[in-house]
Length: 113
Image (tube, rainbow, N blue to C red; front, side, top):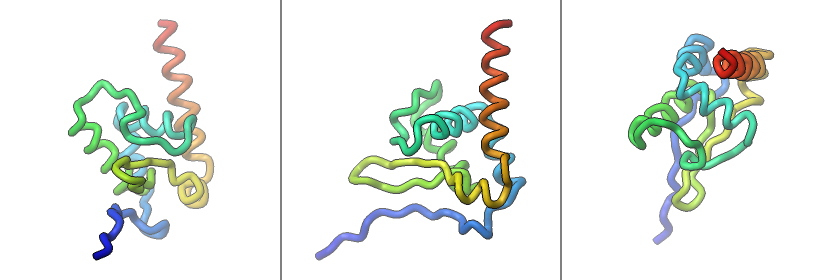
């Protein structure tokens, strides 16, 4: 008996909507996840140190996945996440880089204030 690999639903590129992406990016925790993945590339969910519970972390990753911002795949028991950079850049040129750069600038401002 062969077991099927676990898979997660992701929107097709044509189904990704700007308002869903912007909503996903509007939360500080989700923005932190996106910036981490932009810098690190593919990563397990547990590699990102977030100041929220495991269930809340799961929720944030689901919102990002369902909006089309990230792709998640199972590798053994680990759930690996990566940005859907190619899809986002094709649909909304410059959005991802602008958001990451703006977030970094905001972080630098709040540290110096």
